[in-house]
Image 1 (cartoon, rainbow, N blue to C red):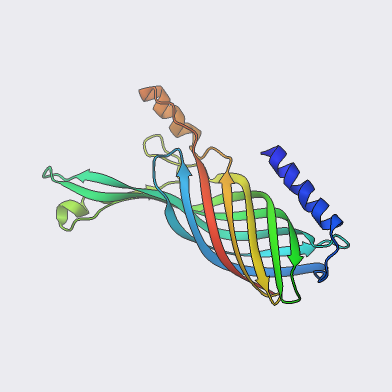
Image 2 (cartoon, rainbow, N blue to C red):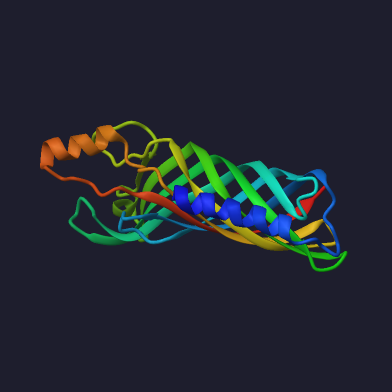
Length: 236
């Protein structure tokens, strides 16, 4: 990962210094607000993906005499998680179909280096790459039966997925990883961007991992956040 990150920075810097633009981006600081959708999953957990939301604010600094190279940092509220189909057995021994979900909401700080190329005075394209650091704010593990009736209601349960426990599956609050964004901007204000983030932090809490190994000799696989984002932005 370190080699990929170093190579990406070198390529962006080289591109910026090597190409003089017909429509040079304005140097200095600009703010951008954005809102969008996440398609997320937790790798190696055995669960499928989950849809969530993302919104935030970022500050871009167009480097002087760098022909489109810029630095970016921001603060995001991002909704991640995973879900799967599951079964529940009621007190009367009736089996119900249901869903098992992890809802993980993070306050995230991405730090990226990017390159922008203006095709015209109105239209520009850009790409950026770098690390992110995140703290879990709210998290919930919830099972819900699909059927109606008292038996189905009794099989619904939830708990805080970030809370330390040796019984229930639980995740550590801190996460970090690498991500990129590519997109287009119109009229120096309106943008559409897509991107991916790969978590590099093992999300299982050590106490839960150790408890399973000590009690059942089960060694859990490392799990990581993965996220695909599409978002709309407005630059001030």
